[in-house]
Amino acid sequence: MTENKDANQKNESDNQEEVDLSKRQFIKTAGMTTGGIVGGILLGSFISKPFKTEKYEPASEDSHHHGSGSHNTFTEAMQFFTRSEDLLTLAAATEIIFPEDENGPGAIALGAPYYIDKQLASPWGKNTDDYRKRPFLAGESPLNRGDTMLTGLRKLNEVSQSKHNDIFDNLEEDAQIEILQSFEAGEIEMNLVSSAGFFALLRQLILEGCYADPLYGGNKDMEGWRMREFPGAYMSYVDTVEAKEFVKKEPMSLSDHM
Image (cartoon, rainbow, N blue to C red; front, side, top):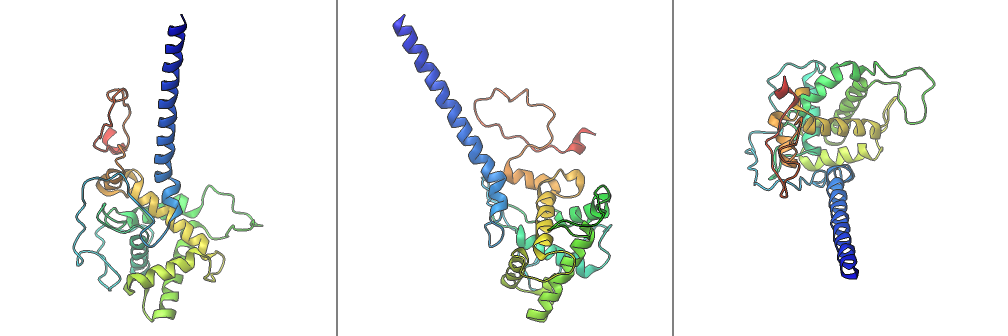
């Protein structure tokens, strides 16, 4: 009886150790996919993309913008942005914050500018469902999300012209990073909205455009999910739920169920 009791206690201890290890692994992984993303913003620390194992071959220098005036070509109709300068500024900023590297494509290749355009053209971009009556609390803005984005993008160009005598899209990468960091820190004076508030909205939309379901206009070809080895919109995992080893699934979009 004593030996059986000791054996049972040992098994319970071993099981508890496995649970604790699983919890620690989950917390570690969650940190990389949530707070780990939001914590470091610029200078290459924004996205670590830790789960991608295959080497990604970036596009050639001539195929996308690197602050040298080689403007991006957009092949889809825009719904919100009517001025090409606003769209080019947006695209340049998205690629600085979420750049292409050896781990995978950047914001432009993933279609984040298209996603942002569609979101701002929707009722969400007009804050249709939000309470918009004065007085506004500290940190709130009378501008809706669309106006906030346009105001911020045009301020980016204004600051670029003032400091470097050129629009933001044409600046070198280091100059673009420096300007975006000043917005992030709230150092740029803006009317009706803070520069930090604009930057936070921009960052939020970029992440959504790179990782949301492709149904909403971004995450082209589900490459954002492939970088994170995220399977997407599977309705069931009954075939793999008891697997002992990690099962890598080909990503699936919501549109695949339609």
